[in-house]
Image (cartoon, rainbow, N blue to C red; front, side, top):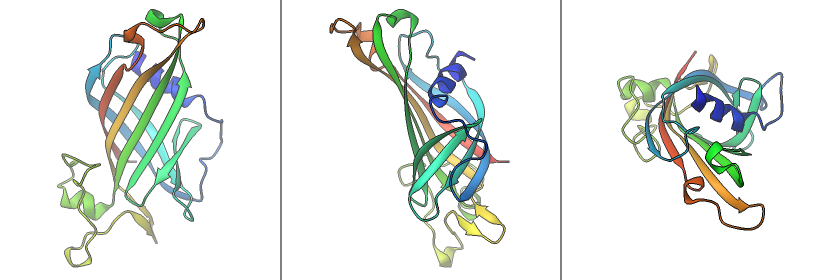
Length: 194
């Protein structure tokens, strides 16, 4: 639960909306963050598995895209296969209360069409952000994520969520304790369309 609270602290720095921005809905996904690798000494930043719901939308005339968690959208980019969103927010940690710290959270996911997901046997590939996704190929029957007459063809998300704590220093200009800077947790991220 503490990890989810950390995620929401970054999310809540956006603007409250009633409908996600953009002119095209990619989909609503049940997300799971698991298998964390953790390099951190801060108690509030755990590596516990957690889940959440995300709505992905885009501007069809550009590379602008949004990941909306609850009613808080975070803007990112979508290149036609990969959606990336980076958010930053100030955060105070118990062990670093005198230090100015920022949480930088990055969501990077390969957006898989039904034919790409089928080609992978319904599983996320080993390296979804680095060549693991089947390339669209007309003769192999694999298409990329795209708008169709039945909505946006994007049934699965595969990628990672990375949280990193960055220390800016003490209010008097001094350096923060080393454990207050560089704390990183990286999760495997999977989303299944609802």
